[in-house]
Image: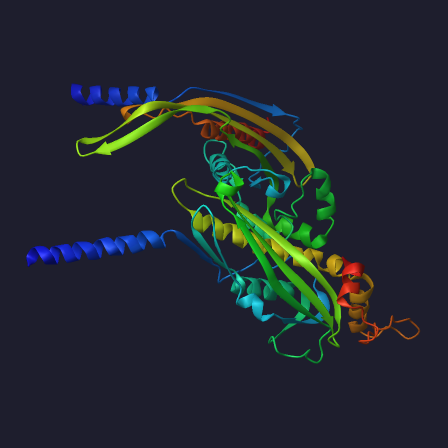
Length: 242
Length: 222
């Protein structure tokens, strides 16, 4: 009887150990917190609304490599936090809106980031000690009327080395993903004007329209009036802006 | 201390010497300009961006920073992450100036120049290079059975540590000096029941040599 009990316990221990070993074949990276430093940039004197597609916060990437091992990378929450924080650095005021919401009153533009693709590489693939993560976002910019003004891809990259030979996969992948999100923030901060080509005349026009009234006699550039009829189609935008 | 203790310490020392493989190193200071007297200003040690293809290991950068802040000519080192965060987003892998000629344009922005002054950083040390294992050979096999376990065989590999350090003087917006170090060595792993690693620590030697030269250059202007 005692021998049978010992055997049962031994089986239970072995089963637990097997489950543990099998669980060890999977790597999960989930970034929930993405705190970025305050950016040294002059904010546009504009009010921007930010609306995330449902795909952003719910985005979870999963891949089983042919060499073995399943990787799950969840960067949805971190991406949303990154965009919110970055846009707060870029604009005088940022108004978050829900995915279903229409363009709110009193804003100058609405920015809608989507997370469209993620790729990663492990040392066995890069033939180095490095883990790499690529993230591709799509940025859509609407004016205050809700007309699409620009759409462009934002491709970010992060790389981090494994710190020890016997492990550190999750931590290295997490560092690479974190660097990729930070890279996206940098691209958003410094490339927005150029990429969206909102800048120059359109953004500047909007910004000047928000300045205090000019002295009498001075010419004030008119606020760009874009009607849905005049607005370029997304295809036109890609030709014009990218 | 009795004779047994002396003997055991002697054997331990002999074993430590025997277990170190040989390596050769060369370090030289190039293109230096006269430096102002070092007055405790902060220095940041950074690796060149991976966007330029650089692969300097994080532990090498940490080693150089740690060596520079210790010893007789200790230098005031600001942690890299703290500096990068303070200057965000201008010293990120994608935006960091790769050449001294890009620095004046960056510092023309009063917001960036003011923040740079606030950090108190006078010099930036840029590290470039890495440690490679270009050649190796042999094999070691290990087996275990009811009667015991053991290894047998012989393996060897070469290690080349090749690093450059460029010192930027932010106050004068100029390149103040350039140190190069090359260390190569061969490690051996003979195994007769027990593997005995004879490791050539080329990266660690490169770190010490480079740091010593940098410390002398920054602290004493020599």
